[in-house]
Length: 246
Image 1 (cartoon, rainbow, N blue to C red):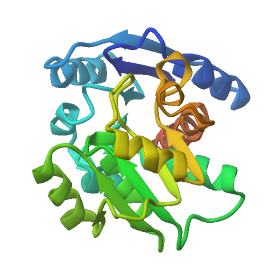
Image 2: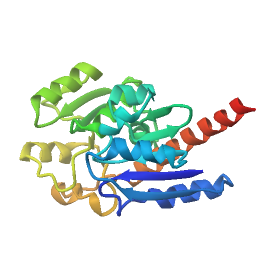
Image 3: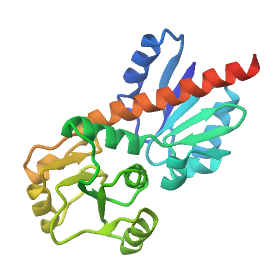
């Protein structure tokens, strides 16, 4: 099984170590490499990797939206988010998104319960934020969005039945903002008041705690959950393809 991660940057990624462990655990002879691919090159690289015999790839920033156009089919999560982070190469190129699954799974592990009926605020309107909204739409959670671009915020509200950031801050906040984003003072106060704050960035790229001076959940757990979901997606479709040929 030939797997890879594409994006820019990728040198910090934990994905190769995680997927190498998944391959060993499954007893599969395979490989997983991280390949730096700058913005604007995603579609050509995806098509070339299919020809080079890759089973599947993960996609990270800034390619999650542009590589959508290289897919022949999309799962519901990818369609709703209009972004992919997981691609399977079979008879067709199938795009999927496990970012929302990762965020939801990480939150529920930390909380020890379902996110149903929780008030959850998402910071940001990009590909990762939309994937999280897509996943939370399947629950009875009350979702809110904060972003600097009002047009994008309103589009999120319409697409995912979310609400504008409320006067009473949500008890749970997930930040999908880039590392070192400078937050306005009122948002810092909201994060300080929240019961639980999670940053989708992980490792040294998770710097939100430096601004709010409180304990936060870094994105490492989210990465592990979404990585496992991606691997299971590839494995299931690879096995189905083999059975189809028999």
